[in-house]
Length: 403
Image (tube, rainbow, N blue to C red; front, side):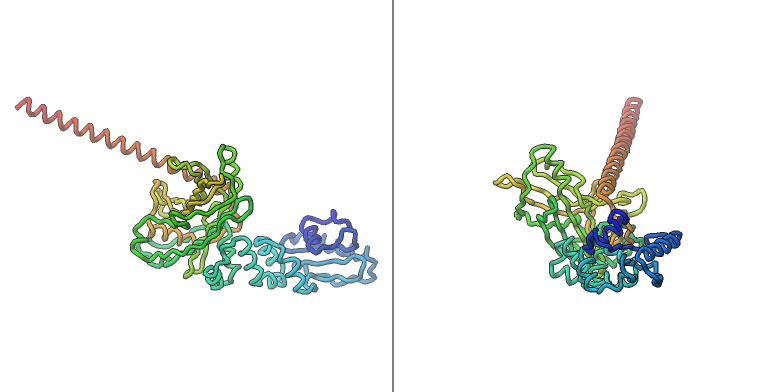
């Protein structure tokens, strides 16, 4: 059977096993989760024809449609994937899959679910996707998640989230006592920066001050091989080639959340120093409707300066939470909103970079509208105050004149 006659999933599985297309092996993956029940008769008919072509005098027992089957044309046997040695599946197949594909494979059958639940598979995926997870403190925290690295991946993978709802923020005292930031920055798929920062959130100073997490000290800089852009086109290239992951971890609540847009939503020079500022942002639901915190923006700014050799170096990587009035929230208010995101439900699909940027643009538009509305309201109040003052002054002058 030619390789081109297989569908996409069968062809991928054929190539993973490394079987040559010129052989008589015909792989037929039948996954009940992927194929509707209305096609069962067609599958059974197809399997019967394959057995006839193979010259089988007796029809082998039908395999369950809920598990992947491997049919070997030219022999009189039909075997399920469970007949393969587990070490072969784990070593030559599962280790080549990414996190989302591995999660999908776990839904195919009970046998595959058992094999894909191995902790080392998910640990390797997390380490390759987020090198900051190799830090000892982060590894220790992840090991205490309900399902280890698998639970961490389902939380930290950039998924659509539905914030949790709970009572009045002023009555909520069960806020995270510590936040761990695991940050990785890539340029053209090459890691240029990775760091883990632990932030205590129990002090009065933190709760009253504007929420801000800095990864670098004021005089610290990280060298890179990125050429400094001097034109608009090179700035656009930087916007397309740089990626950032900022994972917030609650070590006590054992939850994690990725608050980065993955790719920049804006790149522009600083108005004073002319250093390039690369902005990543994620818009999350905040407080009550029609308030400034109805939507808030978790913004990450990466500031890049110019080194003596003409290459850029990272001088600042910071996180702040901003409301629709353009005000940066304090530590307590930010913790309330971040806790909603940490405890909220995760969506079934990844939010694409375009959607993140669209959310950022909508947030910026709403912030502009609120600012204009506020200016109009203040202008009306100013005119009213002037009118009342003029009326009072005229009345006083008239009173003195007629006296």
